[in-house]
Amino acid sequence: MPDVRLAVQSDLDALLRLFSASKVSQFAQPVEKATRIWDETLASENVFVFVAPSNEIIAATCMLITAPNLLRLGRSHGFLENVMTHPSYQGQGFGKAVVSRALDHAWSLDCHHVLMQSGRADPRVHAFYEGLGFRGGLRVGYVAMRRPG
Image (cartoon, rainbow, N blue to C red; front, side, top):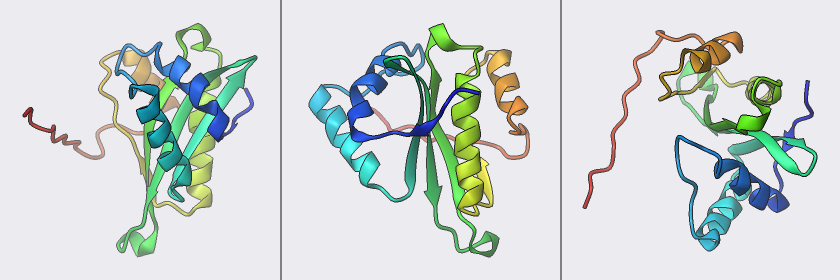
C-alpha cells in the first residue's frame, strides 16, 4: 500500500495542483485565501489532512474532522471530507491508503463512527467506499445550501 502521512505546511502547492484536477469542485482562490485556510486547517487540533505522495506530487488526500460529542458515551464523531485521488493515480491504491489511514486515526481517537457523504452518482465511487467499510442507507443525509445574495 502507498505511504501515507499527515500533511505539512509545505504541501499546500502540491495539494492545490491535485485539487486543480477535480471535476467536482474548485479550490479556494486566490492563493492568499488558500494559504489562510491552510494555516487555519493545520492549526486545528480536530482536523487531520492525510496525503499519499508519489514522486514530487500528492497522488491522493483526505481530511478527517473530529467533533466532541456529549452523546455516544462522550465518543467523538468523525467526518471525512475532500477525498481525492489524481486521475492518473486512480485504481493504484492511493485513495484506499489515505482513507484507511484516516479511519485508523479516527478509531485511535475513539470516535464512535465516521460519517461521509458522496454527491457522485458513479457506482464505482460507492463501491470504493463500501470496500473500505462504509455502509450506505444507515442514515439519511440532508444538505442545506447557502442562499444566493
